[in-house]
Image 1 (cartoon, rainbow, N blue to C red):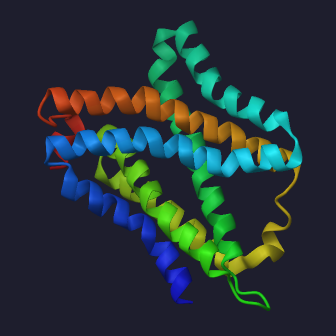
Image 2 (image 1 turned 30 degrees about the vertical axis):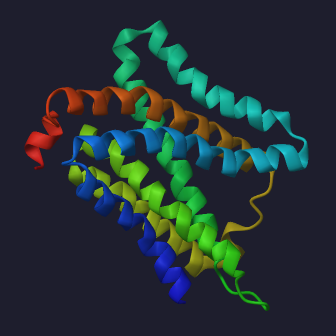
Image 3 (image 1 turned 45 degrees about the horizontal axis):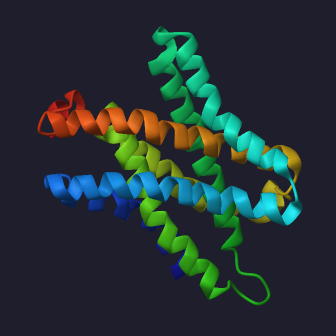
Amino acid sequence: MIWVVAAILAPALGPILYRQLHPRPTAVRFVDGFVYLAVPALVAWQVLPHAWAQGRPALLLALAAGFLLPAAVERASVGLAERTDDLALVVGLSGIALHAGLEGTALVPGDAGVELPFVLAVLLHRIPVGLVIWWLIRPRFGIPAAAAAVGSVMIATAVGFLIGTELLGDTHYPGFELYQAIVSGSLVHVVFHQGRHDHTHDHDHGHAHPHDARHP
């Protein structure tokens, strides 16, 4: 049970880490660079093993579509650019929450218990997940929205653990994995497009983003 509690709480360490580093410009640049590397790494960890193991190039095409479609819409209509980013962010967060719920089901002890390497992998990657979510949402939408987004991942983990695999059933079917690939691609798009704009704006104005002014 202690592992489940730790997995639920781990994403909350991301915002704490962000808050400690955000007043330091050098540290913020380091966090920015880390996020740009961490998100593609997390996406690759979720999508690529299935693509290679099952010999399904469609997953890679779905990943590319999730990344490229928002950019195509933005190029077609400048007025839709901001709304496209917001929609891509919501879609990406839904994928993160869904993945968190599935990890919650995987933490349900079986006859042989839960494997320690798996638990440690879940704990270690959840801290950067919380950091990425806060990094994306806090400058753009403020602290309450960022806290709700991180909280949704924590709640999804708890729900996944409580309902187990009986209600979620088998998730290894084409539609589910394609959805995961698409939302993963959309999240990478948001990080490299929206994230660069928001955090560059913060750096250039001494972290004086409009949301920072409302939420010191």
